[in-house]
Image (tube, rainbow, N blue to C red; front, side, top):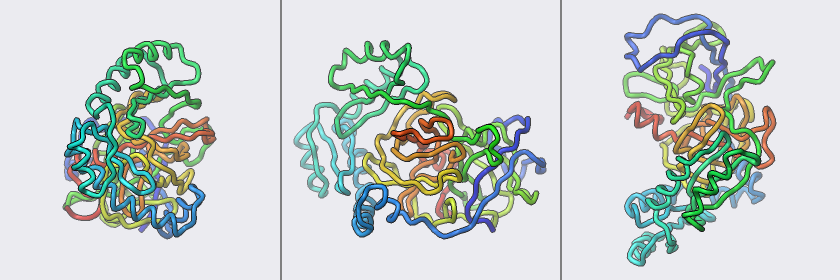
Amino acid sequence: MLAAAFIVVAPVAFVPAAAAAKPADQPAPTSGAAVMTGRTGGGADVAGAIAQQRGISRDAAEKLLRAENANVDLANRLTTELGAKTGGAYLSGGTVVVTVTDAASAAKVTATGAKARVVTRGQKQLETIQRTLEAAPSEANTTWGVDPESNQVVVSLPASGAKNAAQRAAARRFGSAVRFETADGAIQPNVGVSSGDPLGGCSVGFTATDGSFNYIITAGHCTQGFPHWTLPDGSDVGPTLESHYPENDFGLIWMNGPSIWPTGVFNLWPGSQGIHGWATAVRGLSVCNSGRTTGLRCGSVLKTNVTVNGAGGTVRQMIETNICTLGGDSGGPLFANHIGYGLNSHANRNGSVCNSSPRTWHQPVSEPINTYQVSIYGTP
């Protein structure tokens, strides 16, 4: 049994599956479509990685992770309940801060033990502004997202872009509700496509089950165009059932054998780790990404629900982090301790080198879980 894995894509010409089919209806394995291989090892030292990344002690990192783990669900519950009366929530030093537009909502937040901060703009207003700016002329390497801490829509523009002026013109009517940033580097899907790279491919993110069959969830741009998967020794993994890309970025592979990779764990590079559930990411959350190229890298969530106009097309509702990832890391898990948050999708990398101000965008894992009605931590 292989506990950790990456997907190696062979250059073959196959037509991707158009829609999910029942496992019993799948064709016999096709040799050479795509190959999976991996390594075994221990679990992730998340606290150690966070301590190193933030320049704090291990004890402080462990305390921070415990606080964030306890508070991320509270942040999501409060923003859901408040709806248009909040501009979003974020974590600051492990504390939940919920932005609100009126005193009654502030009282409701503080009654839960979270911190309330009164702001001008609610979530629906910010989302409307974001959609308006997304509709204006733009080009690759542009992103749009809401920053709940500043209560603004943030537009990240390429350093030199012919359509940047159109974005700025569209934003004038919204005044201080919009903030512009300039970023370098090309936003690319993180599939391994470098010339001469013998590995190529992507990283396995999460295993899943519907109670009857077992599956692999990875990035949609990885599964797209590769209808079947095998191990290096020729043994069968199973077929691609669905690929969602662009707009979203997730795909589903059916595992023919239940013991290829176990459910109830997520795959690391190297190793594996038990998973206890999944949650919706919040700005300020400490998270780690594991991929076959960069291994274990940790950082923070910068924004959520980000629209990314990348080289492969537009993807939406992404989690943006400051983690450096590279080609081959696509599909790998974004997580904190034993909680899953997303799948590696795009990065603003300079070819095979990390950007000096790295940004990675991750597909929220909640969407494939809900779309496919599967569990990533055992039988539903």
